[in-house]
Length: 257
Length: 64
Image 1 (cartoon, chains in turn purple, red):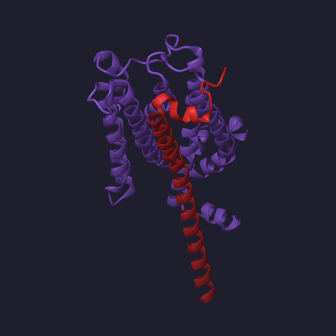
Image 2: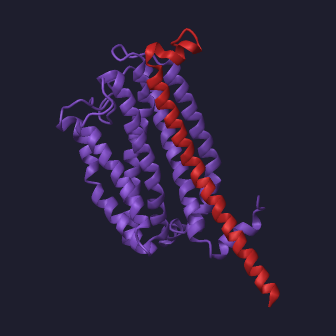
């Protein structure tokens, strides 16, 4: 717990947080436990949701898709905050690690947004009778997917890393206007997509027997997200820092397979 | 809490909604597994790169 005792006299903790080496070593210690937790939560939540939660009175069994659709959508949005904040920190403090986190958040966010759209589509077919409608919520989620892909593409569109990082960060920050639109879309435009089931400010409009496994799945997705973000960032750290002494020492100390 | 289906086969069919539910599950699991495998493969490739680099340097140092 050195970092706790050292942090007050100076900005040392902040610099350490920005050190790729420190990040690599610390996350290496956390990863086994986080992965285990993610796996346990996702496994429990999925079996509970698919087999044991009661079926919906109106939608029948198709409602079970909620156990993937809602957590994926949650993390698609939460991941955007992570990416935009990491981009902002990179722009303001010129922190290398922050840009690496931003770059790593893009593919994960894109996949989760795609999953939110995909699971929504296969849920829509038996429920609404169609895979796709240009509903406000769905369209704004599609824009979110394009924003993630745009950040990813900008990383490779420039000769220099720095220019790519800056461009990605600016796009990520500009794109945050889309986030409140996504949240509010179901209230502003009353179209096909149903309003939020879970709100921080009020009790969920869902029976506890259905809600509890959903909560487990959401927690599982959060843990999964952190694991994936750590893994992507660690790979990026090794790639960018391959000329440094600490990475060389790391390789020499580690038996190659 | 009780199991909602008579048997596993019924759970697979889900009164006709099975194809939708299980497609969602399979695609989600596949893409989430990819999100884990991809960075692990990248990490491995990066480590190999560094090892090859070190070996080259060591060799050229030995020659001079």
